[in-house]
Length: 250
Image (cartoon, rainbow, N blue to C red):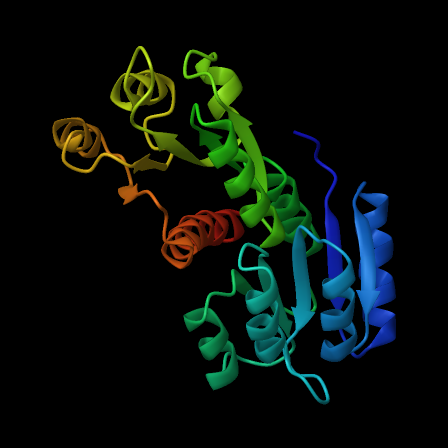
């Protein structure tokens, strides 16, 4: 997985966005500047980003409202707030609504760069399903909502190839010559805590397999035809937990 990210930097202070953009560009990322929430939202409608770093208190649209609007466009797009003020109701509201975290100004640049390095790794939603039409359709849906996606239609693909860059795996439970439980067991040997969402169209037939998979820490089981809002909510939950842990560890 390449370590370069496309980052949107939002602050009504042009010196701040310029300085951050220069630092992030020097670190090998691509940085796009916006000096208001409205400008950031407009750019998000026509461009794709891997993360948004936004000031909280800006004229017009504040950073929390910007996060709300971005979440409607791209539920998988991480948003980090930055502020020169002590924690207040607005920042707490942002955390309750799913922003990754709040960074204090002046920013700890090494912490920020370390977070972006970690963000660039293990950020794929991996689909393992032998129905190519299902894979393509779900791939399109997830990409349109800001997620990075990889597909595998062969369950016998090497586990490292499937899981090495994954932040979560969507694993079908019924294949021609094996079941998803056997695939999950192979994943668990090398990746004991990697979140795996089970997917099946055979609720009753696969009940025993589902139970066995849940016993070895499958995250949950979803049933076809998928309820996309439910899937997006679960993926956002998994991603948010991971990114908050990463931000705190830097």
